[in-house]
Length: 115
Length: 115
Image (cartoon, rainbow over all chains, first blue to last red; front, side, top):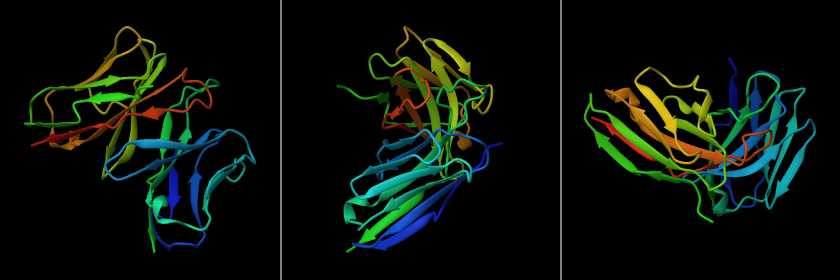
């Protein structure tokens, strides 16, 4: 059974600081997604990572994928209050050779950015 | 354009009653997914539709749960004889084809409370 584990689960940061959220998964996959969820809202897609060594950046967020280590990271640079949300990684574990987007999610990391 | 729409947004029901949850995907999206989000279990995959067919319904927790999709568009998730452990937020997502790397766009969810 695939396990997707994020750490930390809770992250309290000061504005302006940098930090990294880690996402480890237990089986081979080269299809990893990052989502953001604001309180009471739905999930918003942030990044899609589809190959070993993939790196994507958007604003203060940068995501990377190491398929050999089964690890993805979400790096936050110079955090601002607007980044406060819950961040989920998700791995596509569709069976067989054809991907159809069956996602297994990590537990989520609740990020709070303080002034 | 319009995103994924779910109704109702909140549903309170008594134990033992049946409920129907509706999802309107983004127009033109052939793939549709149902997930469940609860405090204890996190985000869990329930079922995947490609067109009107459900090639993967492996995440449905029991035979009280069923889903259908008609016209390659609207989907209904039905829970019969609801139990308290069914209380959760039920999320629907759609993607263009379901293929590798397709982003899933999520609706705002239906919060189900079983009393």
